[in-house]
Length: 241
Image 1 (cartoon, rainbow, N blue to C red):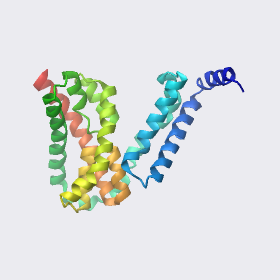
Image 2: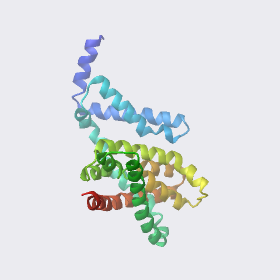
Image 3: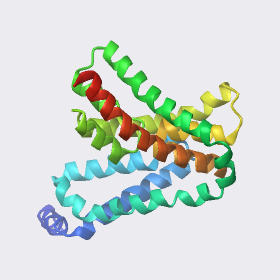
Image 4: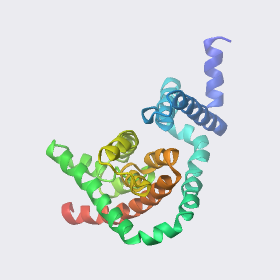
């Protein structure tokens, strides 16, 4: 098969929804294999590796993202059920959650505000533009919600998505070390901190270490997403609008 035949074959396949789905699954499989080979090092996050591989394929083949997403949307749809499934281990911790409810509520609100304010203040001190500041503000919540918040307050959703992924990787990589240095040993507190600071990637890391930590991380991720979605747009428009 010569180069012309391969090009024509790709033009044909790229119009089929199954192609986008296949590329996504193969890219993630490669990413997960590398993740396993690295002894589950957070720096080798399979999601990030898959994103890089998919971007490379789309760039080399000249495939529009919209055409790719026609197939990839099937995986995108499963994001909702996967998030809801986090309620299962959380339900097993119901008794503990009831006792810690006041602390959880305060921790989520305080953590949400600190995560946003510290980033915006540091970026402002370094001379970032208003558009960049708005893009950074929601970087500690899950990607779809963060992109929506950024668009609402005048940021760039694409930049926000990159910042969210970077935040998750840094949190999953350095979070356990920071908590060890702080001598934080309670799995509930460790998981909660990971969920607030590092959203889904941090939660996945917490589940790998301890189920209780994973449950509290999932709770923190969900509550932090809600708190950020409710407070950041209001505060942003009040302060800068």
